[in-house]
Amino acid sequence: MDRVTFERMLYEGMKDRLKEHEEEDDMGTMSILSQKGDETVRWDKDDPASVENARKKFLEFLAERKGMAIRMNEDGQKGDKMTDFDPDAERVVLMPLVVGG
Image (cartoon, rainbow, N blue to C red; front, side):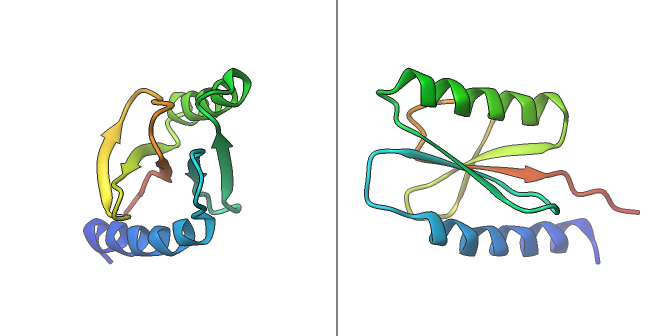
């Protein structure tokens, strides 16, 4: 299986996982996808402690070069790649790097 096919399969699975966490509120949601199990981090942009917790998880993930961060569009489609945490983002996905051989 080539890298593009694998990434497409990962993305399709990611959309299903995100639907499980959708709620009608103003909190941001970050899904950290992992082979060891997924983690969901939520924050309220008006709560500095929850924003700082989400920012910390985001930066740790990228610093350890575990993968990439994607801001999801309102329609649930893959959006822009992120390099900095944005507390105004509604939905963020941290995806593991695809290593092929």
